Length: 280
Image: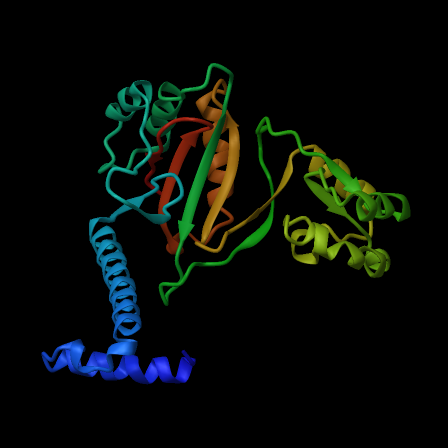
């Protein structure tokens, strides 16, 4: 049967059904094929309706979860939330998530609730919003008064390193430096370094007339800070075995460079462990 004829018969059959008629009134030679086609179509429609209904139910059942470490919101279906260990849940009980702690108290809690057997990092996550409610974008360099414990690998891009990265497609160093004169050569690495956030940039101080000096500074503790697309600055301010005095000094050094009036939340956490809200 030609597709055009079948479509015509299908339309006729559907119209007959809608009016409460009997398909037997249609030409008997085609009746079987028409019934089969209509049945298939109705079956497909039923599956589509069922799928949409299930999707709507799932959407209604979705719970909004806030990651207290980053301030980001995400949705997860009921029953699909990440299952936490008993150890994590016990640590969580020690923290009042409706309270903003003074920095010293927050540090004590973070150390106490750290779940790693090794000496972990203490991370600070500062979220900022502009006057319009959009994420605040900040970027700069900071030299912490005390060692953060995070070792930084810095590479100065020259003909050799540019060729190696181009060939391998790998960029394992934390920071790459170059001079203004060499930026034309470095531009070919944009597809590799760009997505990793490692492309030399004058705003981050990684395009410099004296890369050797800058390398020494960066390896000695100078760090770049910048907000992500949510307006959150993520920084490691030290290790869990460091004295509070040093961690507080590093914490205050970071906040002194940020627009305090734009800060909407500050959270501290260990490498593995629940987050703690901190007052400004």
